[in-house]
Amino acid sequence: MVRAFKWLVGFVVVACFAAAGVWGADYLIASEEQAASTQEPSATRVSVASPESRELEDRYSAVGTILPLRSIELRPLAAGRVETAPVTSGARVAEGDLIFELDSRVAQAELADARATYEEARQELQRFLELQDRNVSSEATIETARAAFRRAEAAVRLAQANVEDRRLLAPFDGVLGAFDLDRGEYIEPSTIVSTLEDLSAVEAEFALPERYFARTRTGQTVRLQARPYPGRVFAGEVDFVAPGIDPGTRSFDVRVLVDNEDRALAGGMFVNAELVFDSYEALTVPDDAVISEGSATYVYTVEDGTARRTNIELGASRDGRAEIEDGLGETAQVVVTGWNTLSDGSPVEIAEEQDRAEVLD
Image (tube, rainbow, N blue to C red; front, side, top):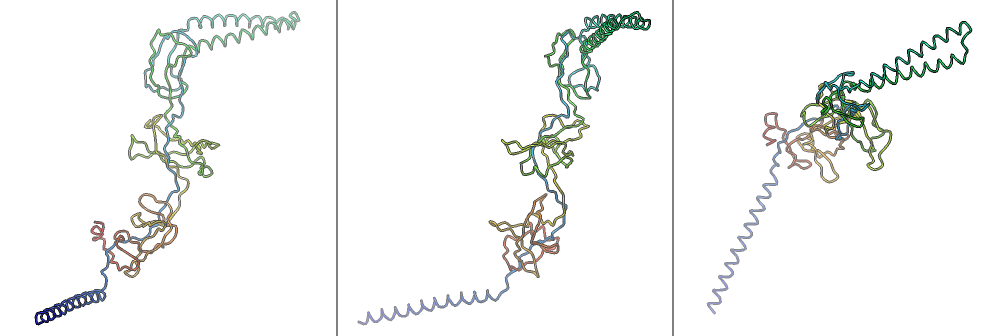
């Protein structure tokens, strides 16, 4: 009985100490929470920027292909053996320069014969006209002589053309392609001797989606960049807009004329093209300040040391800056860095210029 009593007393004592421990712990936790609630939350250091008015461009980017302004295949106009070929592959030629000449001895002989016949017909017609003045020659005789004269005149022109067809002259200033023609070689009108390209100016061809058809017109500015020339921008303007839409691709072709005096751009080269539809002034903020969550787009602004969530409507984004269509004024202070830990109403401290590098880190 005594042993049971002692065990009961010990159990009560232990229970009392345990209860006191739990109460003490709850008391300490409540005290700490009350002390924490009375302290002001620490301010978050942020960097800010005001919206800036920038000139923006409404533009579309596409990939295009360079086309020579003029490009032809060079073929002989008659069959024959090559007499002379004074040019070489890749040579620059001017309009009228001789590319090659064929043996023209037969053609020259035919021309001489035609000229002789022409002279006889001319003299015969002249004699009949003189006789007509003396009422000796009849009108029928004169008409026969006049017809013979005209046939002889046409024969001279034909023979002259045959002689000229033995010589191929450059039809415009340009650059020759591969040219492998040797003296004595026999060629025919089907033989492609070389190519000739005019690269003093080039055209860039690319396609635009159907939705831009009504906004595209000749004279619009286009900027082009080619991979072989990083950093260089070629300027051009639209000189052709296809009159219809391709039903297969729902797009239309555009060609841009680009000056190419230094021959930097070559036919077949790919280029990145930017077609500028319009330019306008708009408020912009750095892209880093814009926060997107689902369908919501907003920034944090600073008002009296407090962060305010401000909903905005965005336009285009160009060169690291976002266009603000609605929601901000020019005097707003927009949080650029440090917003990742903010919520609406959070206290903030604006970093000085020298501290902004630390905020970025």
